[in-house]
Image: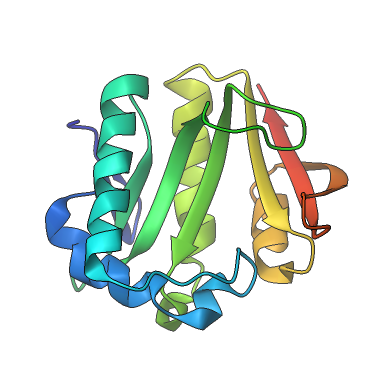
Length: 174
């Protein structure tokens, strides 16, 4: 996949196996998983498998999560991007485009999630011609819920997952 997006401060490029150590360092932190499934990545090998799965999504769907790099320092700060969800049902939906991101905590609160989100939503709507982009966040994750609201996504509803945790369903229609 040769797509690269740029914002004022960020470079958004396909994940590479060389990102594994930095991605593992992010995903191994309990704080990163507070509003996810409380299951931090335990080994670099696990991270490599995740990157390989994402690379397969690039081939099958023409899109997936991308490495997010701080241009000023060339640091891997996390991943952002659009994913085509066809491997499970979420809030009664499958075969849908999902926007998501995950950043290393040391880069939280600096506007990077918002900056990347604006670029990705613009790309999805205007380049990919996605008619309906979805996202879902833990109901208690105020920061991520605020980012999605700021970038123009509309809160649609709360829904429980199979373990009873409440999530928020967001949507952006073209």
